[in-house]
Image 1: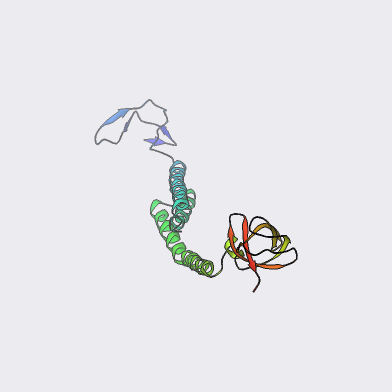
Image 2: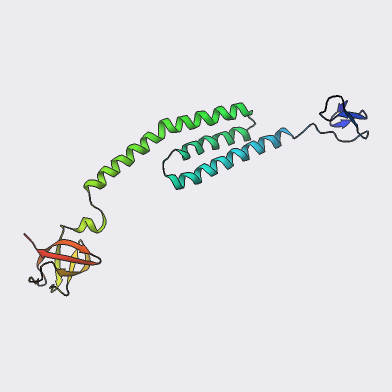
Length: 186
């Protein structure tokens, strides 16, 4: 018989049917891991799963693994609070389903709208093509300097026969490296 964690009898079962092992009188008898230890192990397992999924999301960028990771983190919190394994599983499933149903459609919609915007609105140096510029130093086929949207760029004449003098307005035809190829304003 066990009384407050101390053995009052000399034998105790070790899990095998009918087999008894001698125990010293007054020795501590443990029936397995403490509930606190079990909660900690379950929480660590859920946290590790969440971290693995979050890292996987960094490589996939599908926004699915991160939603499942959110479910794993919620299950880790449930485990840390002492919820039984079946309840941890339910928390995992519900949070994963909720994030997939609520958050992912918004992310996909945003990705689509930004992809559509980028098809119509050029960015970077492509956005400079077609813009107008002010000639700062004489521009010909070999050298020149223009101001484009407040920035100074080296420039060359798109047509080798044209030259532009300081103060003239020109149009950017193409950006080649760090040099603007310019043409007379229409």
